[in-house]
Length: 213
Image (tube, rainbow, N blue to C red; front, side, top):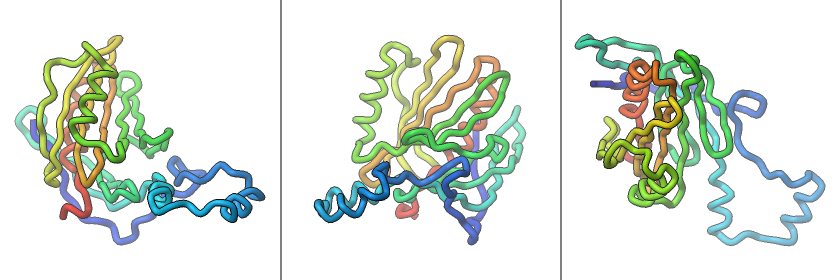
């Protein structure tokens, strides 16, 4: 099965604001306490770096996503998104809907014979080996064999595997970049496996890191 991504960045990229499906995380301190807290504590450089790494999603340009369907190539409309401040970019079919930030994950949901989801999460300061080990611990005995090595068309090295739980087909991809790992998880009803695999192949092929170009 072959999948790909073609297209150019939209120069009018925009960061999604509060109140739309995604947002940038902010401090939960009460407004009147912020100034007092800052006056009492000046964070060290490591803390400042961590504070700066708050998740936001930048909407990029429209792209064409290609996948093979019964030995024929089909093209679908897609949209690029960049996870900031990490600079890692992916594309996904436009008909997967708008992204929603849930905790540290960016989630897309669509009805494919039931609920189908794709989520993207940056695992900070984590190696590919550590990410795989953690996943194996979380889903002990559920994976179908060993993790398989893979490489995105953007040149990022990764691993992936699939598992099945309670009539839901699921899988996970990891891509290593800088000092971090991008984790992509998908879930769908068993009846939607064929369609979901094509969608996932397109998005994982599109993954790239801006500093890697």
